[in-house]
Length: 71
Image (cartoon, rainbow, N blue to C red; front, side, top):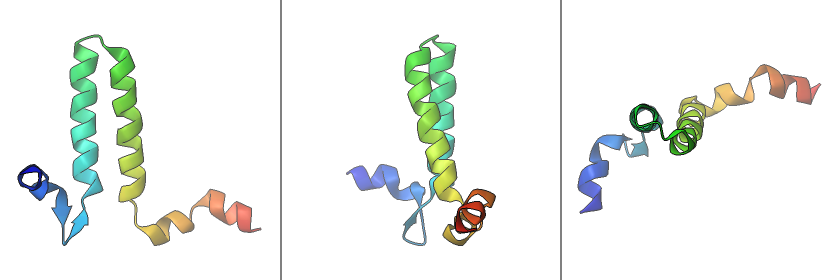
């Protein structure tokens, strides 16, 4: 029954990284309010990774850093 919980996290058959990033952000806030900064930090890294993956692939390749590497 895991699929019931993950149903809202997919869009057109693909993972909706923005929705997952929002979940990570809420978890981070919850642990910050409990003063558990160690765990909140782990959720921060997860949130940043989901935000990175939410950017379309073609746009990641056209970033300034990648253009610098090519030249």
